[in-house]
Length: 266
Image (tube, rainbow, N blue to C red):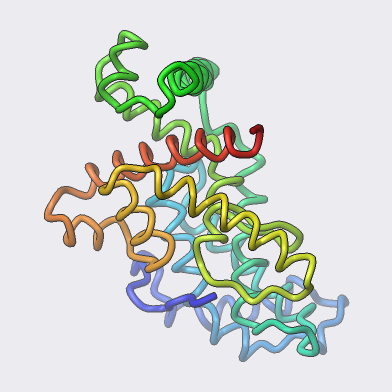
């Protein structure tokens, strides 16, 4: 997996935080394999923490502050430094990325990200999409789905964004034991033949589902996940606003998730 460390958010400069977080690295695990924690390695990969958190806060609107999520991600980095086994077929960068994201997502799981009404709207849109896809053989356009739900297209985009938030953990995250949609769109080092087989099968299904998206949706998925561009950078590529990219990204993920569900069930 290629994880770039440039263009990180400057809300909390890494340089200013290095000393404080280096001390935290020792305090967090004092008495727990403290001598195995490579503090220099922790400081070296702090930019990755900030990049991951910045990606999260631009992807969804979490109920936690940027600093809270950086703290959670730093703990994940510390654990990665403590637990990494260099004999496995993986780079520390890949392992750290997984542990950092896992810690950030664990922190988010403790909070309800959607209201009951928003949850209901997402469920209705998802069910209607499946029904229309079964009836017509193709997923409905945004305009067709909005008309069927008797809501405006803008309201539908908000529902898509709510769905993206609701499914954030499963759509755009990786764990030590599983591969997700987002992770599968980025090249990974896979340790075992079984993991490789499972990933290959998922990639094949994803490829088929992505090919069924419209051209703009395909481009956004590839730029965001494979090329790892930010939504701001994608907006510059297409010469549109960043909020519009967010809408199109949410729509693409909603359609892709529906297609993946049908492929899985059928």
